[in-house]
Image 1: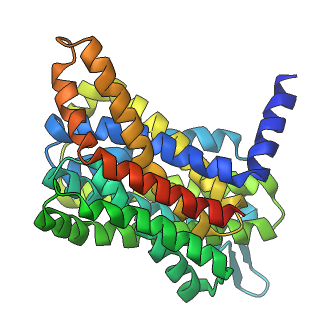
Image 2: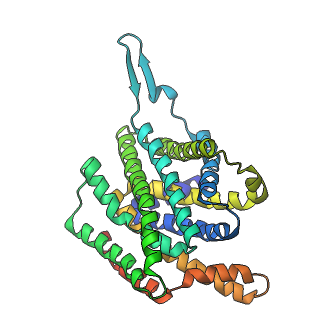
Image 3: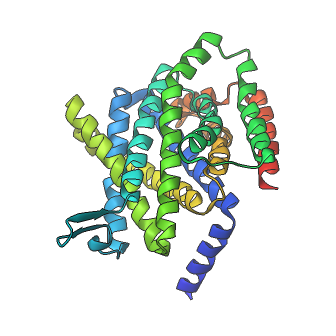
Length: 337
């Protein structure tokens, strides 16, 4: 009975990719709320945050390997008779996608250390709406209907509206944009490469096992990037991990759910560009969660006074953020019809 329910839920989500896509920004917004706290007084710098995030990808790697049943010979095979080596190309796409995904968060943390407003960072990250379809066309010649590009443009307009908020200094916005360009490029490339990996593996007819394999390689790529950064920087994150391991496990557990939703959406959605557009809704959930935290902080005034101050910063320019949300929703409606 439980297995039947699980299969039914997965089938429903796979056939309703729009709902699946919205799960990712919801989970990532929860992680962003934790990041606001850690950037404000726990992480020493952006490098530390990136390294710790990638290290914890070892947990989903071990978890996914337990369920993976694909034989090694199906991925690598050497024919001694003719000297030919077979290598499954999607492994490279997936690994590189995971590596770029984790590196994009270096610039995400760098922006937060510059000014701790995760809502603003995420709205600027929404520029991936432009980058993803451009890269998908340049690398793999993906073309979409005209109305899809119109919907993306309207959704992007919702993010542009924020720049008119009087409380945001133009210099701050420009510096944010300069920092976030690298994050946008790495993140967008990651999405396009992962989508390519899922398309390749789908042609093999491996079903859910194929998805698990690509998702495993994605997490391995993220882990690999942190190992490289750890060796190059010679940082020692272990004392911090030991002190806050419970919060890190919670945060990375939510990150895993966000990554799982995003990767599954990439594997079943009509286009990677559609998924990128919907994931621009992270600031919407950041705004909602920030509002809830501030309300709770008011109820428990003495206990959560510090937390209240941190998350009130996320509500700056709330009126224009709401206008941006409405405009973005119109864009999504056009894309989905």
